[in-house]
Length: 346
Image 1 (cartoon, rainbow, N blue to C red):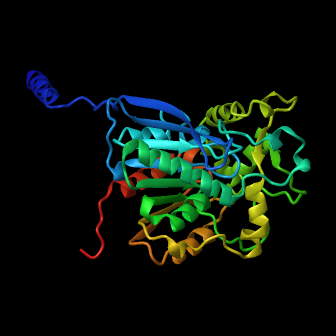
Image 2 (cartoon, helix red, strand yellow; image 1 turned 60 degrees about the horizontal axis):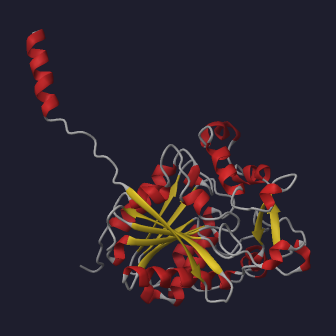
Image 3 (cartoon, rainbow, N blue to C red; image 1 turned 135 degrees about the vertical axis):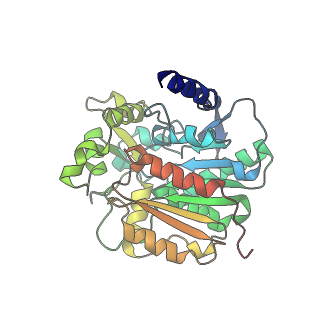
């Protein structure tokens, strides 16, 4: 019996294939001129090594939210993997962009002066222009007419507004934590103080905001050990001035907060999602207090001209589920939408 067991085990081993290794990924970095003189945008690209030709449905651009730059969430290595890596390993040509005033992109000179000396910087309309410059750079570089767009938080307004104006340049649209008209009160980024050109954000306040709305008995294991510290260190490092302050902070432009006061919290929309005419996917997490679930549902209802639309709401996650224990549910749901080839009415 022992001999037979050994023979069967050996025979089965012959048919067990080794796990497929992830493809090698190449990273490239660019400074891309925006439409306004003197403004350069940081763009990072990851794609399978040795590949330089991609079809439009395999090219994607990501943009960040109101406070933090793109790379420290979308391309932060947590447990050896970033979301950017995850998409690139599946054969995509993946890009991220930092809007002006964020990350490694040009910081307007007003950010080197006391904040209250100047008006809020980088309004949403300006951010849409920056995304347009990045999209056109990518389209020209790869020789494609359209690309996929992915935005997080405020980035959903940037990508949504851009798409409403440029459907001919967009293949699919993914909005993670979509922003829409606020039912009452101010956003978590707005403390009601007078607005200057930018605000200074400590990592302790960032952590408090992150965990807002999470049940006390769930806070302990929501963010795996070491992940918040890795993100905080990477994020502070993108601000060469704020990170060197006695109490390190990240400086973030206040245009998004001003738009929140004038539009979203005032019951006015910046644009009409009904003008979006490409397949659209919305992703959200149940404990998101920055942009609560009612915004997801309202936005979904406004997508009246998308060829098809879908949303997923993920349990036990916050606005920052991209860096939490359930992040793979987000990655997989979005990837399914990106990979599928659905032709309505067929």
